[in-house]
Structure formats: structure tokens, C-alpha cells
Length: 217
Length: 266
Image (cartoon, rainbow over all chains, first blue to last red):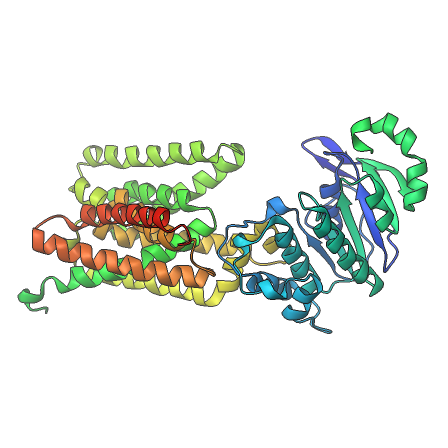
């Protein structure tokens, strides 16, 4: 796929092949085009070239900044919005089940603005789970949250992959966190490397030279 | 024919209806971060009102068209001045107000600018009441038929678009209804003061409400109380009701702020 914005090509000939039931990390520096690529895959943006070949529905869990967290809404109402996005009404996951998966059942009647950042991310994930799509794209779900919450989110994502859902997760994490994923794709407007975490790590030396040392720990 | 002894009935009914619909609309606009657009529209109706009155046409139609032109112009400028939308919108607001004021001497229109700017509730007639009933009905239909979409658009507009909700159509409808509500409220509080009635009751309840519905109901109840008491005090003390309601809005907000400082859990 290719995508241009204001005359600048921000996605250049990206070709991805995601295997069903896998958890894939999409990593890269700021401005690499990770969010743009996710928006292209979900259909929120139209590419200048290329297409998405997918037999199932694709859901997107947006970045924190896309949500108005001060809106007067309870956790349960927020998760219910995911239900109304769903095109396929078969195999319906209940709101309570979605909240249970992310460990937020006790908070169901609490107002969204009264939750911590990590709890809010879990609610956003529950809303995405409600859509029950074959592919779930997550735009930096682990940003600005504490390590235990990050671990919890990764556990939920792994569980979803085990159940057959295909997940693509954009992230800034370059360290050991990559080992939690089946596949890693390194993006900087084009795909610089892809493969298992081990294969990508082996290429890290070259990537450090290409992308700057701040990207890699 | 209304008994002359009950002349106050129409202004009181109008005040109560305005007290209900202004904060309800305000709740919708504040949660969608479009309250500046409402203020812009309140001022943008002025040229249309003056033109309609000068040519002896229905002021609702004139005000509605003018308000919509102002809103659409602001939306267009917002796209050009991304990140500086407030400056663009305030400029349009000032421009339309100025145009309205200029049209009065230019057309030698028999328009009482003071009444349009600050309201004259005591002079309300049955046409004002009918206009407000139409605005109330339109607002009710929007809320009853599109409540979930309004919540979705408020909390995650991009998500609502991705979920193939008719976001643009709903936003346009909301703009039209806002214009209707604002024009209805002009008799009560005028185009300058309507913003207080749109905002104050909502700000008092926004932190304690757990849903948009609850926020709208609480705000409407408070608006009803504000307009009812404002109208009553104005009649007893022989004061203009519009400015009095405007002052009561600020007093309410200050009281809420003081109460919150004493009891932060509120």
C-alpha cells in the first residue's frame, strides 16, 4: 500500500501478510506511519495505491488522544458502543464478558473520567473486543500505562490470538516486550524488517544505524 | 383570546420552555465541544433577523438562514485555519454582529436592537411560543431518534465515522436545531445572553452526571428553575427578565464553584 499526505508519501509500498490467530507488533519511531497504516488497513483512510485483502471485519482500537475521556459516560455504556459497531451479530459477547476479560467488571458503573489511564485503556480494549471482528488493530494500547497494566493487556491480547483473532499492535516498545509477540514488523514509512522477534532483533544493529539509537534499547 | 389579567402566562410559559431546551441543547454542544459554534450562531442570526424584519418577513426564517450561513462559513474557515479555529470563529461572530448592526440604519429598519441583543420576555406573544414549541419538538425528535449516535460522536467522532454512522448528517441537523433553539431564546434572553443559559446549567452538573441523558435532564431542570425564578423576580422587582436570568446563571455557577471548594467530592 502507498499513502500520501500533503504531497509527502508517508507510506511507501508496504506489503503485509498477517497470519490468522497471531499477535503482531508494529514498531517504529514517531512519524513512521504506524497510525496511518492502521487507519489504512481499517478503511478510515484510503490509500493512493494498493488494497486490503481480508475476508473478515476489521476493528480498530484508537489511540488515547482520539477519545474524549471527560465525556459523561459509564464504563458499561462505553463498552456497549462496541456492540453497536458490530456488523456481525452472531456469537455475541456480552458486555459483562468483555469487561471480565479485561478485569473491569467491578468498575462497570463507574464514570469513565474517574478511572486511571491504564483502566481507561482496558475499557477501550473491552469496547474493541465487543466488535468480535476477525482482525483487531490496536494503536499504541500500551502507551503511558504502568508495567502491570501493560502485562495484563498483553495477556488479554494473547488470549484473543489463541481464540483465533488476528491482532496487529502498534508500539514504541523495542526491548524485551517484543518477545510477547509472534511477529514483529519494523516500519519507517516502509517495512524495514519483519519476522519473529528473534529474527528482527538480529537486524537491530543495522536498524540502529538507519533509525537512530533512541529507538532501540 | 387571553384574559388581560393573565398577560404574564405567555411570557412565563415561554421562559419555562426556553429554560428546558437551552440547557438541553447546551449539554449536547458542550459534550461535542461545539459550544463556540452555538455562540457564533447566536450572533450570526442578527443580519437575517434585521433583513426579515425590514422586509416584513418571518424573522425565524431570516434568522435561521443567516445563522446557518454563519455556521457553514465558520466550518469552512475552520478547515483552512486548523488549530486556530477559535480565532476564525470569533472573527465570523464579530463580523456577523457588525453586519446586523450596520443593516439597521442602511435599511432604515424598524428594529429594536436592544430587544434582540438582550431579550424582552415580557413582550412575548403567541408566535414566539409557537416558534419555541417547534424548536422543542425538533430537539426531542433528534434526541429520541439519535441518542446513541450523539453519544458516539461526542466521545469518539472518528470511531463513529468508521462505524458508518451518519455523522455529517447528524451534525448538520444539530446545527439547524441549535439555530432554531437560539432564535426561540432571543425573545427571552437575547442573542448576547443566550450563551449563559446554554452553558451555566450544564457546567453545574457535568462532573456529577454519569450519562449524557442524565446531564440533559439535570441541566434542563436547573434551566427551568433559573428561568422560572428569573421571570418571577423580574415581575416582582420590575426588572428586565433577560439580564436577570443572565446574572442568575453566573450566580449559580459561582455558588457551585464555592460549594465544590468546600466539598471537593461534589
